[in-house]
Structures are given as structure tokens and as C-alpha cells.
Image: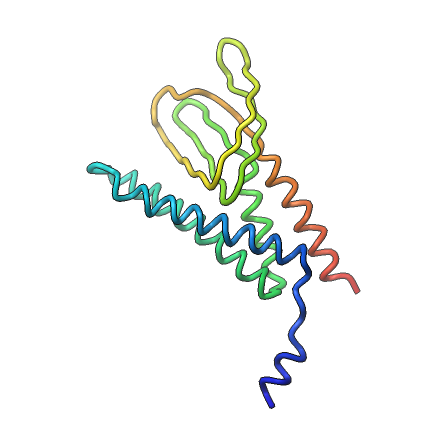
Length: 164
């Protein structure tokens, strides 16, 4: 009897929400897969490298959790998923500081600051980079256009789910 009541009251997940959930779930799993493949290839990594790998694992796991929560129709999933996508909008590098997090696909448009400004378009799958004090790396800013589209779609889907 309880099972029938539970199934009857369960809300159906809309196709857009399901697609967004699967994207986040698969993007996070792909990132974790890449991390697991890369870790054994490291030769005597520094503690800071392990800290970076741990941060990447936490972010990719967060993406997986966001996907599961969206798939289950949890209201808090929209806020968490929006936070996950906002973390993926900007990638940058200045001096010794660099940041890039993508769980899924990156379609990035950016600028590299050299003697002349260089416009770039980047495509990548589930990537992560965090560097602090890494020397004179190139300076750049990139905007992940796909993350911006996903933020729009998450807002639209949240409005449809919460509308009276």
C-alpha cells in the first residue's frame, strides 16, 4: 500500500530537467574517470598536486550529486546545479594563478594576453586546472558559452517547475 501511494505522489521529471541532470551526471563521471586514469601516471607528485586532485574530485563529485538530485526532482537541485554551472563559466590565468573547471563540455571564447591580444575558441571535455604560484604562465580569460546556456536552461526549468 505504501509503495502505491509513493509512486502515485511522485512528481514526473520534465525532459529538459532530465537532460540537464544527465549532462551534469555524465560530465562529473567523465571528470572522475579522467582523474582516475591520470593519478597512476604521476611520478612522485608533490602534496600540492594531491590537493589539486582532491579539489578536482570534490568538484566532479559535486556535479554527479547535482545530476542525481535533479533527476530525483529535488527543489534544492536547481540552486546547487546553478552553482555548479557558475563555477564553470570563467577560466583564467594571471601571473601564477590559474583556474579552469569543466564537468562536461566547454565551448570557450577567450582572450590570451600577449604582446598582442589573441582571441581563442576552446573545446574541451571535463577538464580541471588550479595553479597558485606556478610562475609566469600565460595570461588569459575564457568564458564557457555552454555553461551560460545551461544556466539559462536551469533558470527556465526551475521557473516551470515552481510555477503555479
